Length: 263
Image 1 (cartoon, rainbow, N blue to C red):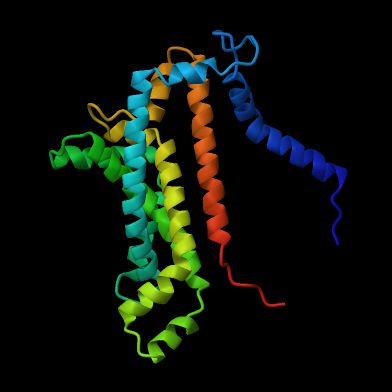
Image 2 (image 1 turned 45 degrees about the vertical axis):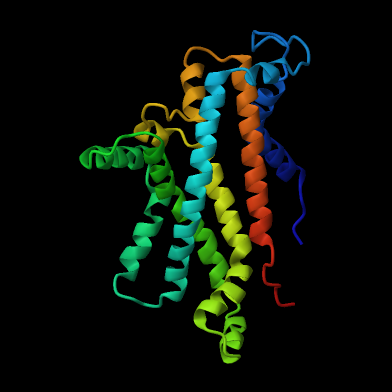
């Protein structure tokens, strides 16, 4: 049995500090009473209150929320279909090409994805705005949903489906009564992951946005270029809380109903 040595402990502490210390400092300074973000003036929730009266940030947050909810829902639907096709579709013609096209956005640089979508919207003369940002977010987030659903389907006990079919259930009824409830945690986890990715995206949204469709990350980035304000720290803290909640929920749901390992 391997021992947890002091070297492992030091490496773990430094690793976690490197990852999370900047975020912790940002959260602490979001409760800073001083207007100067680098000077601690005492604990206060003043900037969270003022944030609620900043109409431009609230408008950007509303756009981000609508884009996230809609794109995550549609990406979950398409990603689930893609996962089913990859696992249950057998060895159909073009399967390798289909698999590569589904997972390509996972490794594609965001700049290339955003630029290619921009060229597409310009080529088809599609006005950029809310819908172009939503379509872009569906494009890059559905592959993450497909990965989550595919991994759940690969560990799925198909004897349950075969039993339902033997008892006279149709394939459609078997899917909705047996398959879908059992893969539901993976589907919900995929939705949460897609929503978190949409909430966090800056690069692709910057390429595909238009008038009246400024997302919250774009708003924060434009304000940070003129200097960090305490309100920005408060907004970022709220985003960190939302993303953390989404990731934790997705992780918990992804492990739910996991098949028990053989002793």
